[in-house]
Length: 462
Image 1 (cartoon, rainbow, N blue to C red):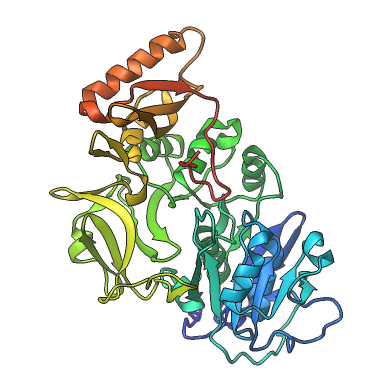
Image 2: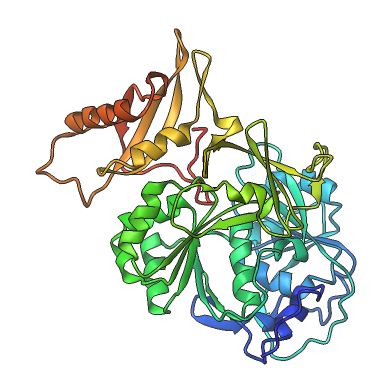
């Protein structure tokens, strides 16, 4: 079998080369199509000339977005991938910064609006055979940073940088993902499935996590990815036991030992992998030993493509997988040595590096810095806790105090166990035994769920 060349400069050509006609498939609702057969020509058009050399925004659902990426990579100058949670009120700003020429959309509100740009309907279809289009350009893929609030931040990638961490040999895996492919984490899974000759099962629109798990079980999913928050919800859902994955992947948030241990127990046959990646830095590394953090040896000897460095306690990444630059009025994405500052605070031990939290998320307790994620990892390790969110609350004496919202594990807490007041005291005592005074929560509130962004991350600014 021929290994597909990653020198090919566009997605459609890669999908049609090296897989002996056995290209991967996309399952969307009740239809299954080969990735290589996806098309997204607007109705009435017979070729891609309208898009050639232009900067194009794709404002559409996941299926239509994938079709447009396959159709127009290598033809358009830029393809801007609009995330599902970004309001259209930002379109004028984005249009200016990305020098947009037109918009492809399946959204009725946008198609009917008097937009500042031409808006064409993006209607995916499947057509067998080679479309025979000449691909000439190295298209820029414009993505938005996750967690963006206020003015959106646009990041420039190419297909080469997005594929840098992907094994080019055929894998034939059946992928599911709790990510949306219009964000970086989901895009990685789309490309892994498409370029590896495997399958990707999209979640039905607006379906619950239980419905998606049932769908994945019916289609024999082997590989699944999501954030730790996604996986905690899976473990709390009755449908979590329907799947028997061979591979479980976590990324997007700090991975603590509690979630790794819980997944290892629940899915004993699965290989656990957690990856460190961001829209700007790309995929930096994967950890495969089922332990939180990463070996200190990664700092000295990662691989020939990736260099890691810690400066001022934050992790820096240099690799061909990182984004090229920001669009708009932002500081340079890379420093003078070509490193990207991830803003993730690292504690370096004798043989293990631990993630403490984001530089921007520190709670100030009387001048002492507290990382919420560090306290959450302690709370999540308690046998009665499934999920926690630590915050700072204003205090006139210390500036802030630490408080926590906790979701209890329904499998372990029932009517025969102590009431919530007793459990709170138990948790406070547990934290007291493991944390210095300034890091201990002063109060714990029990909740049924925690706020999550559309990208599957805990919302920390609520």
